[in-house]
Each structure stands twice: as C-alpha cells, then as structure tokens.
Image (cartoon, rainbow, N blue to C red):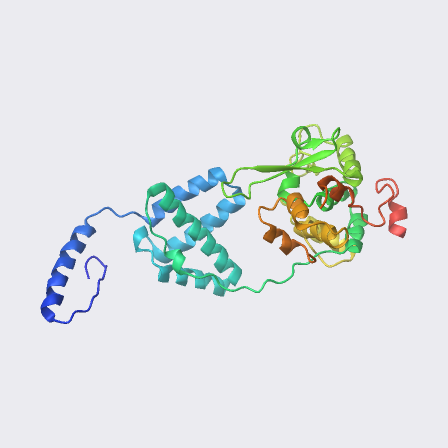
Length: 340
C-alpha cells in the first residue's frame, strides 16, 4: 500500500512476489507525485455547463447530487471513485427516499462521467458497474372527463382558461406558462407553439399545435383582459404579489385548491397532460406516433406510459378534443354547464 492505494497479486514463489512488490512500490510512488484530478472541482465545472444548457430544475437536481457526493467522499481524486462508493451513496438515497431516486441519481452520475470522458479525456466511469434497481411502475392517475368538467366549473375565469389550455394541448406546465403573445400564439393560423428543453443537448425544441375552438375562445378571453406590462399569456393577476403582471412558474397550490373546491380527488397539472394523451388514445383511437408528436416526446415508449390503451392527421386529432358538456360557450353559459 502506497499513498492509500493498495495493489494485491498472488505468486507461486516468494522470490517472484518480492520482485513484483518492488516494481509496484516504485511505480505507485511515482504515481503519487502526479497532480490530483479532484472530483469536486470537475463536478463544479460540469455544473457550470449544466446551468448554461439546461433548465433550473435540472441544474438544482444535479447540484444536490454533487453536494451529497462531496459530503460522503470529501476531496477525492476522480480516479479514486469506484463502484462501491457509488453503490453506497445511491443505496443510502434509495433507503431514505425511493428506488426511483436511486435510479435518477445513477442516471445523473452516468451523465457526469460521460461528460468528463468527452471534455477531459478521462476514461473512467464506475457507474457502469452499478445496476439500476427494478422499480414497479404504478399507473399514474388520469382524471376522468367528468372530473375535468367539474374542475372547469369550479374555476374562475382565468383559471378556467388555463385548464382549457392544458387539456386541449397536452402541454407541460412550464411550456404553457412560458407562452408569449407575440411569439407563441397565432390567432390567424389558429396555432400555438410549445417548447421544451427536455433534450439531450438542453436546447429548446419547439412544436406547433392546432388551436381548437375551446382553446381559441380561452386565449381570446385572455387577450382581451391581458395586463399591459407583460407579454406573457398567463399572468399573475394578484396586485399584492411581488410578481404581479409577470408569468407564473409553478402555481403549486392552485390545482389542489381547485380540486378541493370541485369536490374531486386532487391531481396536478401533469395529470391533465396524461388526460390529453389518454383521451386521444381511448376515445378517439389515435395512434401512438400522432400522440407522441402532440405531447413532444422523443421516444414512443414515453408516450405509451401516458396512455392506458394502446393516424391520421394531427390537425384532425386536436380538433376532436371537445369535453362533454362543453359544446356550448363555456364563457357565457356557465350556469347551464353547472346544471348538466
């Protein structure tokens, strides 16, 4: 053992062993004098690139992983990180949080070691020897049409417009909150643009989706009542809020409060995205490739997880979305809808 590094090998004779030991000690002493390539410093450099290329959520997720690794390993040479160290760190995560958290951290570590190979030429990836944990995927809740209708009835004017935008485009919450009038909404062509950074490179990838009648009326209503100080479509309209007039980012309590008001089991914005995909698959029998394109998934496997049953034209697919009970004008005949 030299400098905390150990090498072991068995021989038939003591002379052979002594000869090998001498050569190894010399080689290891010379290796100790080489500068340390710190895991900590490399990871900080990696985080700087993630900050530039990916969204804040991804950055914070990877930053938290780096902090846990540093707390467990301290200042360590990146070449000293071995599969056992990674396994212990991830196992602790699985025990305290979940197996899914184990797999997510494993994926992020893989990305880091792939990055140092690409950017630094360091071909060392101990994560490859750590296997994923088997996780039983539970079906994610998908609200029924009746639940969505009750949600719309319970919402105020602007909340209802937001719900309509979610369940007629299948857009992610962040995609819809990012909408700007002069960039993403085209009333003449009746199209809306959705963009996501959930790509390998972190670059924004856009898709245009047809605006059906429900969405057209909802967005027209938002346009006529918009606040002049911001170009965002869904604006914070609370004058007491420090972000008054600016776009929403999360609205964490909005869906929970609205579900309670409607008297239904709570679900979030992402459930409306699953509702969109499931409705097209189950009720309108659209194909996976069409739904995949509308949802903006890179892989059809991801789309299949959204729909519970498994094409023509994408325009036709979106035009079909029309929630039962909402064939009338939902903005002028709310009492009639409530009665139904």
